[in-house]
Length: 242
Image (tube, rainbow, N blue to C red; front, side):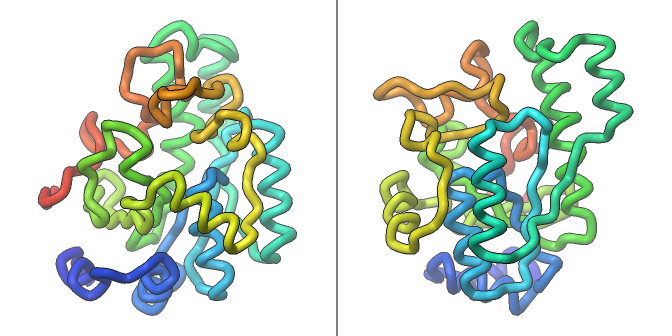
């Protein structure tokens, strides 16, 4: 099924209805990638509460917050459903650490991107093998770099169609859904962490700061790890076909 047909047939569908539609069309060839953030927990609930066949995958970088691992365990216990886990390639990570050290990402943007590539991008490529559609928890409000993203996008680098079911949700919308459905969430969200990644690379934000200001705060770069970049930039904007 192509992007244009999906856009037409899924127009106006809410979170649960849109995921149920994708489940009927793609089943386990639809993959949702979670990092256990507030948005991802909402989508996880929408998948598991409907007993859908959409596969949920996560990336264990090895440097997550203790609170993230605890939430991961609680999520498993709450829903009783598996979350497929992908780790960095051991030899690649060993080589990187032997050459540059465990915290070299503070030294340069290049080192940080290499670390993200090894710990996140390569494992994600494995997680998406065989997938036809990749579901994410991206919201436009998260950063200025995401405001013009389309709900459906084509990612030629991964040869997969991407779908952002809550792209237009606000932070308040997300919290409302979490509280209404009693969805487990990371307590760091209540301590000034709207976006939670690896522990060494994430801090709480100050009032008025961008949602992703706490990610790689020492850089003056786009606050992205590379998962959603195509040819050196973010995924195509709305209306783009490539």
